[in-house]
Image 1 (cartoon, rainbow, N blue to C red):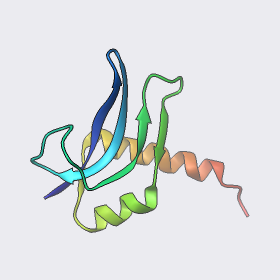
Image 2 (image 1 turned 120 degrees about the horizontal axis):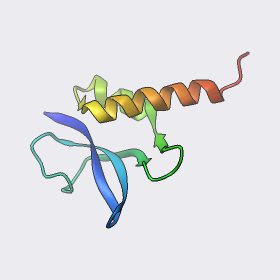
Image 3 (image 1 turned 60 degrees about the vertical axis):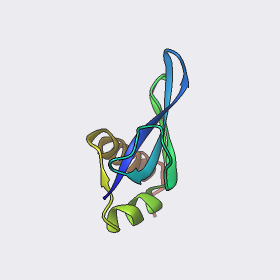
Length: 87
């Protein structure tokens, strides 16, 4: 089973994360299939960069996002919708 999870990167007490697709049972910082984006909670406001098209592709293939990743995907979708000018 596939999961869309956060993988911790960054220095001690300065976390940043990659949003990745990997096997559900593998280690947090182990090998992964694809990097979908980044999440930096130390910025104000928190910085989220996600390739929503690829995320939807993997969700369609059966990958299950964690609760935190689900929240970040919704936030990123709202930010992209607000950034696009209405026609």
